[in-house]
Every structure is written in C-alpha cells, then in structure tokens.
Image 1 (tube, helix red, strand yellow):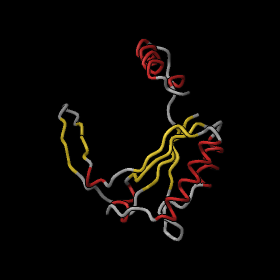
Image 2 (cartoon, rainbow, N blue to C red):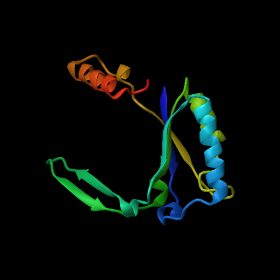
Image 3 (tube, rainbow, N blue to C red):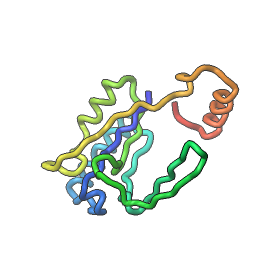
Image 4 (spheres, one colour):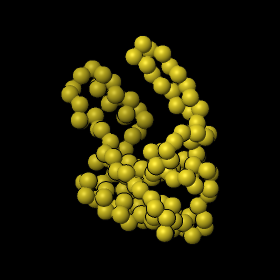
Length: 141
C-alpha cells in the first residue's frame, strides 16, 4: 500500500521561511530511517503557493488560471513523503515518528492519504493501458 504523508503548510512556510538547521537535521535523520526501512519512495518540500498557480476546470470546459498565493495556509501543502507500507496502521506509525513539521514547539499537521492502485479499478481497456504505462515508467508497487 502506498500512502502520501502530506505536511500541511503554516503562515511561515507560506511566507517562504526556511526551516532552521535543527529541523533540517531531524528531517534528514528521519528520511534516512525511512530509506533504511525500505519504505521511502519519494519526498520533497514545496515552495510557497505564491510561486504556484491553480487551473480551475468549469462544467462548460473552460480553464481558468489563478496565480498564488492561496489561503488559508492550513489548507495548503508544504511538503510530502510517499511511502510504501503494509497497512494504514504502519503509515500512521511512520507519521507519528516524523519530526514536528514546523519545528518542535510549533503546531503542525501531517495528513495521510492512501493512493489508488490499478487493482482498485474494474478491468477495462483504459486500465490495461494504464498498466502498460506504469510498467514503462518502472513504477514501484
């Protein structure tokens, strides 16, 4: 099972305040733990929403682009880990072991979301095509 551990943003991360050396060290040690356990697939921090954009799709087929920043910060994503584990409980345990996302003493939140796997869908031509593409990308299951 793959899970995304989503670090929720706060006003500092949205302002582009970089983490201090202590937090970077704690995150590096945690990331090494995930890697050593063989569960880490990907990870990254995200730039503030002021450097991003949203594309909105209307029912009429229109696309509207809105440049950031967006608010409120707690609804935004500051970073993520993508992990592969055996259960939701294992994903929760990994999330609980993470350093406080915005530093000790600061409020923070990590949201866990399980990814869909192609096996979750009914067999179809589109799913067969998706499996082919997945295999060509060398995606880890």
